[in-house]
Length: 186
Image 1: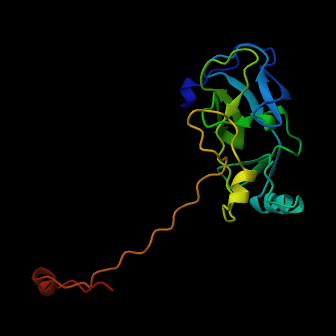
Image 2 (image 1 turned 180 degrees about the vertical axis):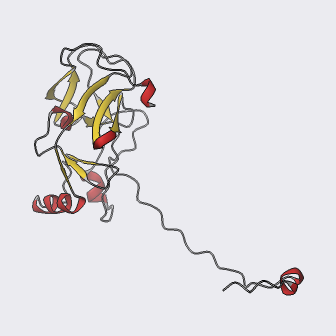
Image 3 (image 1 turned 45 degrees about the vertical axis):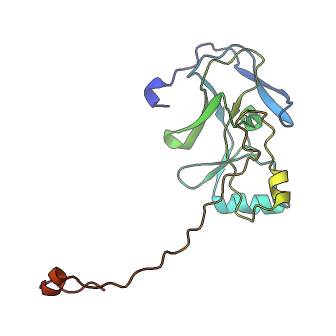
């Protein structure tokens, strides 16, 4: 979504509220109709370093499948559990109706991707980064329950695949490179 296509809040009444969700725990629901492109809510919380986020997660006895950390482009994290707001309760979906946009100054806003009707649950896709092994137990702990037809079954971001090193063929100089006056590359 480009900055030009983002709309200001059309209706000043609160756009959302928190209540129990059939997807997971608490969820955020539209209090009124929301237009596509409308800024719904800011994701608030204290900005901390990634190292501090790791320490906080470790104190909780990780792996913790209920987190309010939101990564920023500058490498820091917004901890929505520390001075956060209702946005921290927006659930993940593999077919989201909202998206999170980081704007200047490291502020995160949630925008509607499509029209959202009153009482509809808000969602966005947030593949979680988990550095440990993605064991079956970890995958169950981070299971996605969004119910979308294209559901991946997990909220975990895929691990980067390690590529096997391709065998390198020995370099055989061509006649042109043998005659070149340029120094040989190491």
